[in-house]
Structures are given as C-alpha cells and as structure tokens.
Image (tube, rainbow, N blue to C red; front, side):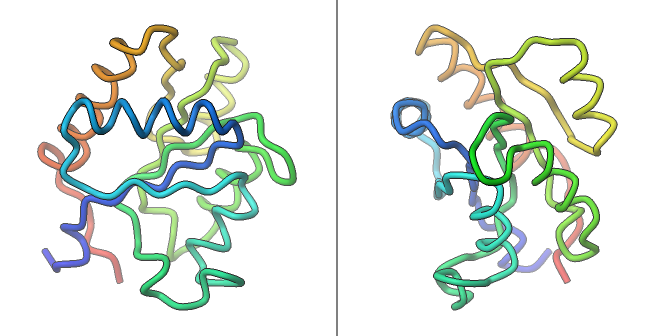
Length: 150
C-alpha cells in the first residue's frame, strides 16, 4: 500500500459550524491520529477532491481515506454530491459514510442506492458521537483493506 493510501485523512462535508466543532472535539476526545478537514457543502467537496479552485494545489487537498457526508447542505446537498462522487472513476472508491440527522427510511434506502458505504444518524449525546467516531476510525483505517489510489 502506498504512503498516500495510509494517510488517515477524513474530509467532512457539513454546513453547520456547531456540528463541525462537535465532530472536531469528538475526534480529539477519541485521540484520532489523523487529519480532519472540513468543507461546507457538496460543491466544495468536489472542488477539494478534484483539486479545483482554492484546492488547486494537491498539497492543499490530499486524498482522504474517508468522507463523512451530511445530507442537507446548501448549493449541492449530500445526495447530489454522493451521486457525483460515485460517477467519477477517480473518486468512486473513496468510502463515503453519510452522517446526518435523518432517520427516514427513504433517505437510508436512497443513500445506499447511490452507493454510500454506511449511513449513520448523528448521535444526540456528545459521548455517543465520540463512540461512533472512534469505531469509524478503527474500522476504516485499521480494519478494512482499501484499494490503493491511482
């Protein structure tokens, strides 16, 4: 596996500043040994992943090992972003975990239909969020084997 593939980088697409802060604090609490980066909507996520706009230099936007994706965001929501990710041959292998407040069966079914790797409803309690993020980090970066990026 290449050094790039071993990077513990998570990119989270989340428009709510309070939720970004909670996730950042929860990652610190579970002693995440990687890098957490934020974008505010699906459009910015694609710019980051495709090295466009302010992310034009690859050093500013290293390939993540995992994407955390909110569903309800301005400009381009999580559903549209997921559809675009999975249609892109260079990006479709990056695991995408939808982390959202929704618990609707239609959202869950639709998200898996678009190719998401997991669907998690955001925990209400901070301790539960820490637990979820600890498990996510362990699973996606220490347990599973992922394809080497090309």
